Length: 295
Image 1 (cartoon, helix red, strand yellow):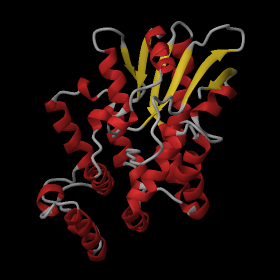
Image 2 (cartoon, helix red, strand yellow):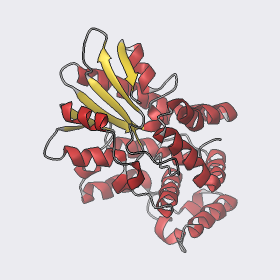
Image 3 (cartoon, one colour):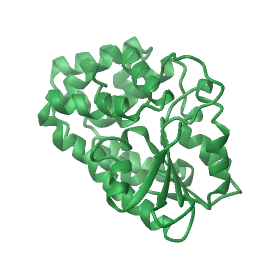
Image 4 (spheres, helix red, strand yellow):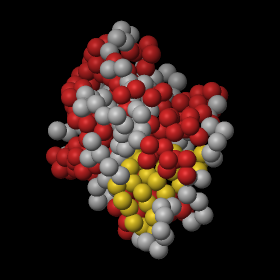
């Protein structure tokens, strides 16, 4: 089962799994082989969730308490409204006077607007008319998650950011500006975009399978659905995955190693970045670190 490509941008998932008292999700202890104790703790995030993801297992919360610093991909609270508007204008929107109807084929426009209307947006051209393709896909994925009752306020990264407030320093591995520029420059042509929209029609089933893998601490299953199967079936998407995942994974791994030199680091990154041969877990092992997955 392949995850919709544009939904992977936000990794927003929903599912029904057997209830548990608490979760460890996808998490690892990270340490140098010469050290007795871990120098970092790594956990995979879903960025939109609900209360069913919680509580975390005590072993996760204890590790958070022991850490010196929280590392996240981006902390949106650092971006002012004025700066956000400037970033939107620079990366998310077409130049003034340009509409997605001017840039995309009529069949693709019809599909986009049909999907928005199905999610309760009666006039998508009025709200999203100036959005570039990547941000149209991001908006659709977020609206789909919201239609299932999932919100960014319940996201795992948001949870730890809130716990760190006034108690623990927070550092960004990327930052919002970097992520928006990345999304604007993703190598998505119209054919790829159209196929992604078609795949998003089955979003509930797909997200259920992915989130079930997360809640069951099954990183291999999540990697297969998010990356391995789409790359196998659509080899032309390799540049997309290289930009969205693999390049970023290498940078994240280097920054985690740097953090571990002087501090105990609690690291929260998107779940799609962790497993697989080019994932952060394997990259950290290649850099001489020992990782133990929590269960």
